Length: 169
Image (cartoon, rainbow, N blue to C red; front, side, top):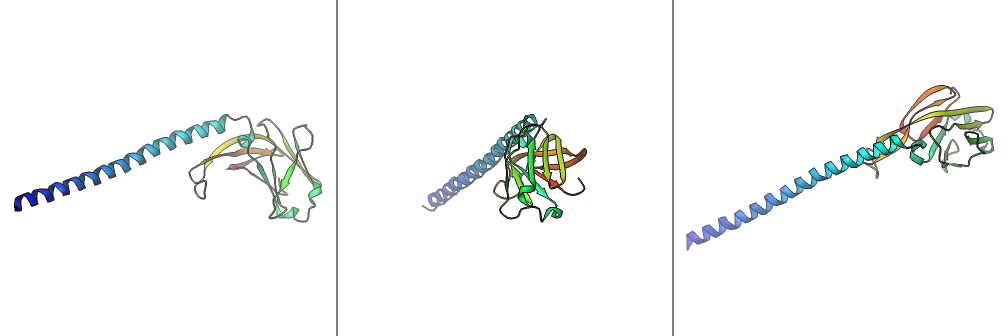
């Protein structure tokens, strides 16, 4: 009688151990599979960004102004894309030193921004992608502006969709 109980206890322990090993194996396989799927997906997003003919793959472009322009009236801002008519821009609700352009800008276009008496010509755009490392977009690739020229001066934007304009540009 004692031997059969001992055998049943060992058998039940064996089954529990087998279930735990299968569960751990399944979890490990899940993470390996997920790792490869994310890598492939990220690679395709990078290619999509680099082959796009639009600046930042059609995302909105933020224009951030130096504090020198702090007392500027919004009517003093004019935005044009290449030789086309004036483009519409929207302001940031937090402060008037930030605005964005929702128009689709081609890589070969020139974005002209007139602020009071200063004119900025932004051209020769190059796209780049960056991986979001925090926030709700963590792990996602975003297409943004890698480089552009502002009035002939080459500027790096590191894959963000923000163009910073100061008095020296």
